[in-house]
Length: 367
Image 1 (cartoon, rainbow, N blue to C red):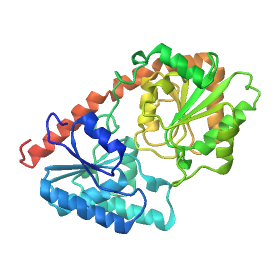
Image 2 (cartoon, one colour; image 1 turned 90 degrees about the horizontal axis):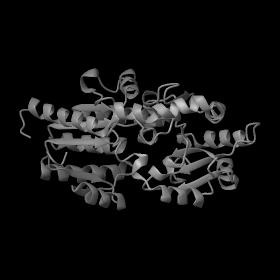
Image 3 (cartoon, rainbow, N blue to C red; image 1 turned 30 degrees about the horizontal axis):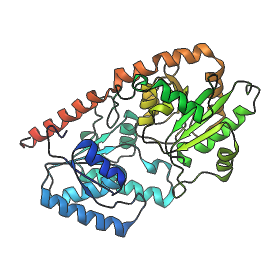
Image 4 (cartoon, one colour; image 1 turned 180 degrees about the vertical axis):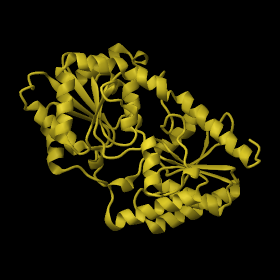
C-alpha cells in the first residue's frame, strides 16, 4: 500500500515495531495499548491517538485487533476521519461469559458503530457478527476469499531453505529420519488447545501404536499471564522426551519443513495464518471446527476437521495420519496447491487496494 498511499502505523512499542520500519519502510508511532480491560489506560491511548489523527488528518484509518479497534475507531470518529475501517481477525469474546461477555459484546458493537466498514476475515466470523447483531450487512464485507493478508507462497516454500541447515536443525532437536513429526505453531496458552493436544499426544505415545516413532514439536512462546496452561500440561511438556518445545521463532519455515503434519486445535480464530503457512510448506493439517480453520481445510482433501476441546478426537486424527500412509500422502499432495489457488497474498492485496480506491471515490476524495 505504500506504493499508493502515505502510511503511518500506530501500535504498542517494542522491537517488532522497529522491524516494521525496517522491513516495510513506513512511518510508525508507538502508543501503548493493553490487551487487557484497562479503562484508564485505554482512555489515555484514545486521547493520544485522537491528537495524532487531528494532526495528520488521514483519509483512511484501518484498525486490527479488538483493543486497537475500539480505540482506533472511536478516535477516528471523534477526529472526523471520513473512512474508518476495522478488520475482525478473531473474537476473544467467543470464550467469555457472564458480565465479561456483556462488556465485550458492548465494546464490539461500539467499535462497529464507529466504523464505516467492517471486514471479518472469514465467512464464519461474518455470520457470527450478523447472528449476534453487532452490526448490519451493509457494513460487512469479506475481502477476497478471507484472510487479513493472504500468504506469500514464494516465501513459504521448501525450495527457499538449505538442506544442510535443515539436516543440522533435525539433528540438534534429535529428530530421526523415520520419526513422524507433528507440529504446533502459536502461543502456548489454553485457548489454543494445548492442554488437549498434549494430553492426546501423551495417550498416543502410550497406545498400541507407539511402536512408530512420533514427536510433537511446539513452536511458540509460553505465556503465563493470560490463559496459562494447566500444571499437568507443563509437567508433560517438560518430562516427555518426545515433546520438543523451542519457544518463539522469528522464521517458522525450517520447523514446518522438518515436520510432517500440523495440529492446530484452537478454540477460536479469525483466519489463522499458521494453517495457511503450514499448507504452503506442504503440510496437511488437523484443525478444530472453528472460523477460518474450517474454510482453509477441506475435510479429507488437505487435512481433517475435528470438534473443539476434544482430546480424543485429536488423538484419533493423529493416529490416522501416522497409520494410513495412503490417506496421509493424498492430503500432503493437495496441501500446497489448495493454499496457492485460494490465498496467494497478491490476490488479497489487490482486493484490498480496490476496496480503498472505491471507498475514496465514493467519498469524492482523491488518492
